[in-house]
Length: 213
Ligand code: ADP
Image 1: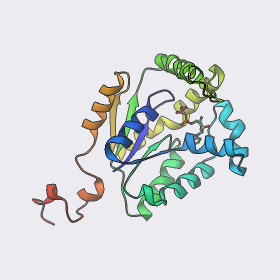
Image 2: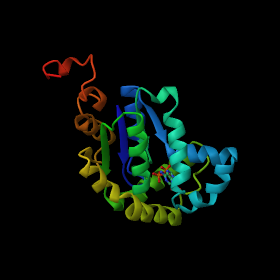
Image 3: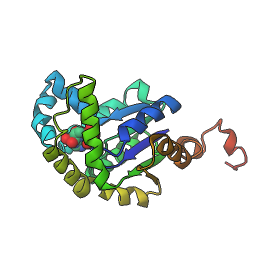
Image 4: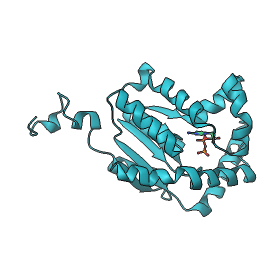
């Protein structure tokens, strides 16, 4: 299964990705986590994106696309993956379409977590307080000004992907304001019964036995 989780910062993408990982044995590919790891390790890419991320802006498409392309090549991603935080711009979505096409694979669903904007600031404040209580270092972008920038970037550059994927008939919208287990259940219901690669007519799919091939 190959999924994208789409939604503004604080929508619950990371939380739901972890639940999907546990349930379906997919790998979670979070570009935010990968970029933060690069910053922490002080790699050339990390040095390039450190300031951008701290300010809440988007990193250059070419950098992020390269990171994802390398990551989905890894053997553990072959069975399926959940993209969390990518794509975030139309050019990234187009690059992803090309990558998938080259590999002969398709997206099973793009799950949009729809949340009311008023709740986001509160959620991010709660996340920051919980991390501080656990003694974890705060994210450089968990402050009011960076959050404003992140929301602005979402509205201007990421929200257009909702239409982009609606046109591809893969968009599934879920109410992200419900309690966590209910959101998980709604995502389960929204997922197609079997991966697109099987629906396309691959052998061994019992559910497709009645379909003439
Ligand atoms: P959030 O909690 O806001 O959803 P993430 O952890 O997904 O945040 O990402 C944090 C930051 O990492 C973003 O604000 C941006 O600077 C950078 N980033 C992550 N993914 C991408 C991407 N696909 N394109 C550009 N920048 C990205």
